[in-house]
Image 1 (tube, rainbow, N blue to C red):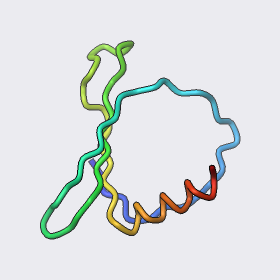
Image 2 (cartoon, rainbow, N blue to C red):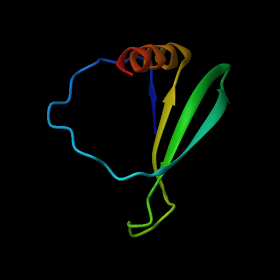
Image 3 (cartoon, one colour):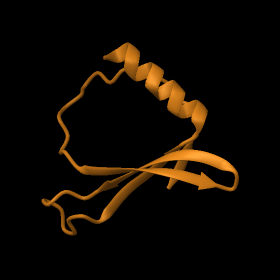
Length: 74
């Protein structure tokens, strides 16, 4: 698990499609800090489908920056 507090934008030159997975967004209050947590789960093609795979937490500044980056990209 990791908490992201800032982003650096770097282009990906050799992008390829990735497998779709299930994700759950959780609203977290942790030691007087509010965070957005994104949990992803292994797809049915993996050895343990539905197993927690990745967890990322964003603080307020990182969430706002990601929204800004996404808004400009799309």
